[in-house]
Length: 360
Image (cartoon, rainbow, N blue to C red; front, side, top):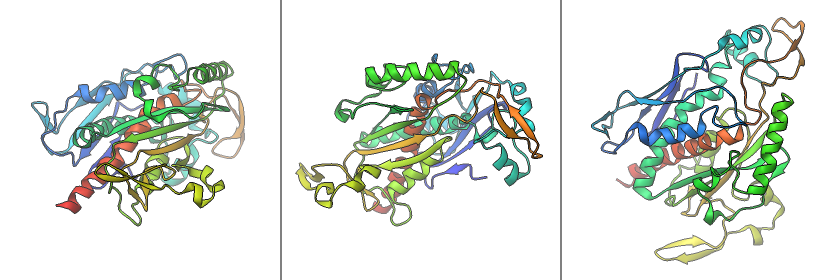
């Protein structure tokens, strides 16, 4: 199973949804950086279940512990092991799903591939696996911020059919994003999104949405063409997140309707470097960062596990009706925001270390 991500900054996640705990091992973090649980916990708290009325009611504090790789509050350059205990496990909620694969979930495909699947909450296919990513991403983000001043901000731009207007990216901040439980920074749209999610929770149904991400102060030169282009690694990272179905960067799919004369980003002088007047490229040209803001979007499908009765078949092919129990998000995107930020940080950290190796 491919449970590791990255080359020089390598993260291996472990754990299933209802095992004793989940986490990650981080290898390649430079020595000497100040690091404690307090640097990691804020992002895990933004990701955790039970944080608002529109998320799953599973009640987990998701408290992280650093088991290795630091001494006296500083990194040693050795592997950092991070663990979060699962304290609110209810594997009994999933008894029926041992024999009936959930529509659009990973039960069937895991069973076909491995000959066995974790019936309790989806196992490694559960969004709970993302805890290790978020914890590791917080470490990468701190190093990037200290080294280059990088800022990474993600937000919810759409829930179902409700989409917010194009925002002023210069004003985007995590405080603004977190001002509403939907993590949409446009108050009117956020209220409509909340209403829709609450209606779907009552109806035992779900919807999808879009998370946008902005990475500021990314140095030019990151990316390893031709197969490890920066946008290719970002796409891989984002599409590895549970429930993702789409990725675009810069103008994305909308750019195909523009003429080249309008879509091209003219170069201008920006002090000691060249910059671009517009940013249809999304901060990446030729697979390499150009010093402009990196801007991309990630699409999330409706949550697969719903309480409505669904006509399906069991693993033997016999007709069955599945009404899933358990505690599930009617819309995953508000909690996906820190996961998207974490995966962006992991990509940029790995690419930055590779670029440093080129320059030495």
